[in-house]
Image (cartoon, rainbow, N blue to C red; front, side, top):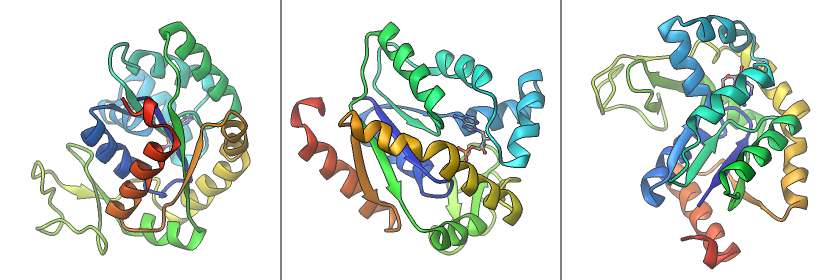
Length: 218
Ligand code: AMP
């Protein structure tokens, strides 16, 4: 099974990518996480992409294309979080999949209001070491400021500030939202109510995939 998760920043794609990967044995590919790792290493790629990320705008497609080709596994199904983010990237993904002799099973659209996004992103914390995601109110760690999984320090993402959140929301509606119709026209779009708790969102995704095409959930 090959999935794409589509939705505004803070709609819960990263959390669901982890759960879906675990439950369906998929490879989770989060472009944002891959880029943040490069920034942390201070590699030349990291330095280049950091400028865009801090502004909340998209990193150029040529860079993203190279990154994604490296991470798409030939043997295992995948769940893509944060790619594609515009029509050019969607076409790029189509070409890569043709080369790999694969196809998309479904595109999950995370439907959510702006108010809910602001609440989520302002309380979101991530582990500096392993990238696990928490929320100070909705998904708190057992010990404040410390990752349950690896003991790493929990920090606020540097692009989770009000100004950059607003920019990322704007960029989503301008550049990524056309993908909703693009994939709807291809008969691949499944819409879920992303304002619910993470377990309920997962249940809705799993039920919709099953109902949409039983044969594809192999
Ligand atoms: P995310 O973790 O998905 O919210 O992504 C954080 C930032 O990484 C975005 O605001 C962009 O600057 C960059 N980014 C992530 N995925 C992409 C992509 N597919 N295309 C361009 N830029 C991206």
